[in-house]
Image 1 (cartoon, rainbow over the protein chains, first blue to last red):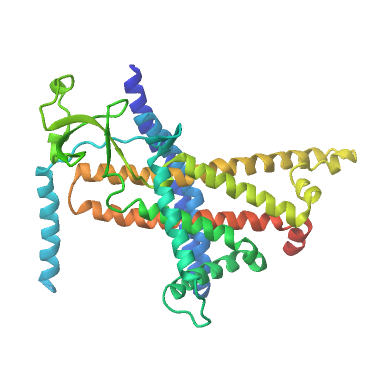
Image 2 (cartoon, each protein chain N blue to C red):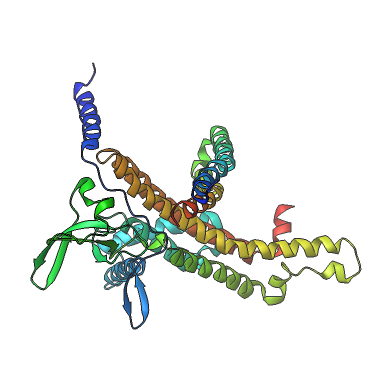
Length: 75
Length: 326
């Protein structure tokens, strides 16, 4: 396989596979947040703040994969 | 049909979006490293650096202007700034409790700097006004030029006329046209890994500083070099030492994590905002603009909050933390 084709394939695989984990993770965080919101609606601001924090941390792993994919594609 | 006007507007938007396929835009030239605009005394000045200067000037101006004649009952700019700072202080006190005031200057600076950098990068003019240079590594475009006084001003022709066709690549361009690669004067500050890594380095070093100044060097270092039980001869001390070593690795990895999270989000957003208009020129990019505004704000908040959280952990000594749990 030529290097160019391999690079494009690698870029696609990097982002695709790298988004599975964070996707599931963010879904779990959201589910936990929504459940605790249903149990305790008064704590909404605290739950929301912590949920955003958790989602950003989980998403950063997907961003690492995106950076690798972009490096492969454009550099 | 409840409200026919809404349907009409929606259909109009779809029609516009479909019509834009008749007016193609050139394929964007995406550069990962920040491009040098000029060399000042041998130092390369990049477009992200200039954007960061703009952000800093705006922040300094607002800070100076709103604190000139402080009133007890604020109004005008002072009122607006106090509103924003009170909201942030409330958030910080929720997370950090009594330490919030101590960390507040640092995290507010991070938040305001990053959010202003991100949002300024969305303004028209950022990425669109710049210099035409000899094509080096990036793709070249065609520009229609005109002489305006001493300056030579060029405009990219609309659509695919801006692309350099294969057979024209080596030829001389006709008068009134030049070929070259484009370097904009301004580009969102956080799209450069330099900026974000610098912010991450400052954040992590300040966290260490807060820890050492709160707990003293020996107690804070004992979090990472935990050999007390090992030196007493207990084999379980090996696990303590290993955990301490892992903590050290985690702290160092935070620099990379902070830097790449912000860089990745902002650079990916910029690439998205370049590619989407290439695919559909009208109507649809608005949605992604909204997304980018949201992401820019969230990333600023996350950076500031994470710094706050890690600072709070750093100034909490081991024994205090354990007592609070039991």
